[in-house]
Each structure stands twice: as structure tokens, then as C-alpha cells.
Length: 311
Image (cartoon, rainbow, N blue to C red; front, side, top):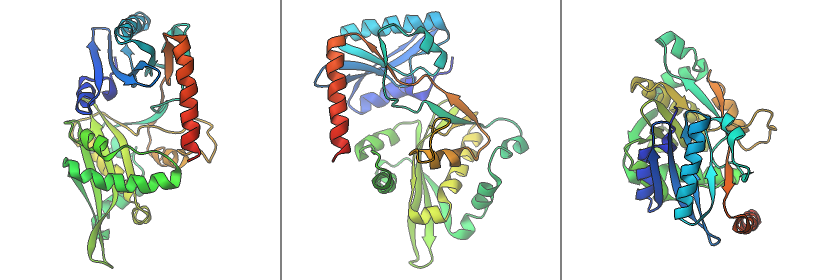
């Protein structure tokens, strides 16, 4: 039974540190972390990449457990995202498709095997850039200092303005970095023109017992010309293998057949230069418990999205 970090007890502790309320339940055949979300219309439960179960009967048991929990907390629906896309066949009749929150498709790199097998999965071009990085004035540092998250946020905000995407708050990212499973990587460039070091790329990764998740990252225009993200990604992967982890999750790719102007097209092309495997999840769905309030919630959500889009 594969358990993603977002359905772990460690993620439960993160929710507490963020000031939220969540519920963690681990049984022999299923496990879930349900986060209590509040809206003006009412509460709902959200299971990021969950619940986790080993088969049909245990999945149905997890849903019944979540329904009881929802009733205790006056939730109008339960938002689920099972990793196993086959579980869609077992959803209750009152289940509605919702826009995907976490990526439905991702790219997984196998970190096992001998050195030759492993390195053959990495782009030779990026390995060359990584090998010559120091000669070009690029060094990579690891940090667990919450204050350093400002470097990642600065790069993300610049990217967000160009791509029209949202970013997390500084407080949220700082709280993530405080967790024992998180590490911030910073790529620094010694600029010969200014004789100053500048942050040209940054990445925030999460590790569980077997996998590294590459959740947050960004680079500057200078970093792009120096291939900083490629160099940094190679370091993230090498460190994960050295740590004894067995896989690396690139955290999201554009769906198969997506148009060339898809927001993730560039990211996807980069990730697929690594010899990995595409993994598909079920996607995001809502199990509706109160149809009337759920319709009001959906209408309100649609209006809010239009207002943000037109700002």
C-alpha cells in the first residue's frame, strides 16, 4: 500500500503547525489524513492524494469512516484524490468531479540499480552542466533556516507574474521548511561583473522513507541562461539516491495530448528528459453529503474564480 507524504502522520503535524485542524487514521488496510476546511457555506474534508487503501473493500471502508467523520464535523462534502485511478469505479453515486488540486499525472524517476543503470536515466547534457557548475561560479547549498525561504518566494513571485499562477505565502513556506522532512536547496552564482553572489535557482523538497518529492522550485532569468534548474535538479536527485531513497517524484506533468500552450508544457518537457515513468492518479472528486449546500458552494466558488481572473 503506497502512502504519499500528503497522507502521512508527518503531514498531519504540518497541518497543526499551520494552525489548521486535521484527522489522521491508520488502519491495517487503509489510511487517511483528512484536513478540515471551512467556507462561508460550510465545512468540508479534504484528503490530499487520499484516502489510501489496498483494494476495493478497504477503500470502501475508508469512505465509510470518512463519512462518519464528516457527519461529526458538519461537513457538506468530502474531497478525495486517491492515487489508484481504478478506485474511480468504486466511488459512491453522489460523487462529483472537481477541478484537480494536486497533479493527476506525474513523472517518477527510479533511483535504484547500479551506478551505470542509474546515470543512464539522467540527461547527459545536464550531467555535464552539473560537473562544470563550480567552474562557472555556481554552488549549491542546503538550508533548513526558515528565513531563507524568502529566496524561493522571490523567484516564485517573478515566475507567477509571467505565468499568471498563484504562490503560497511566506509564512506557509516557512512552516513547511520547519518540518523534519523538508530541505531547501539554493543555487548561488558568483557574478564576475558585480563580484557578488546571487540566488539564481531554489527548490524545496520533501522526503519520506522511500521517495523525494520535488514540490517547489523557480529560477531567475540569469539562472535560466546558466541552466541553474537543471544543475539543481541533478543535485536533488544525487542527494536523494545517496540518502537511500528509491524514487524521485517530479510532482506533476501536463496530461498526455495537452496543447503546446499548456501552462506546464515547458516543465513537462524538461522533466521528461529524465528516463522515468508517467504515473496517473484518480484526480480530485467530491463526495456530496449535502446537495443543497454543495450547489451553493460550487456557485460561490465559480464566482470567486471569475473575480480573481478579472482582477
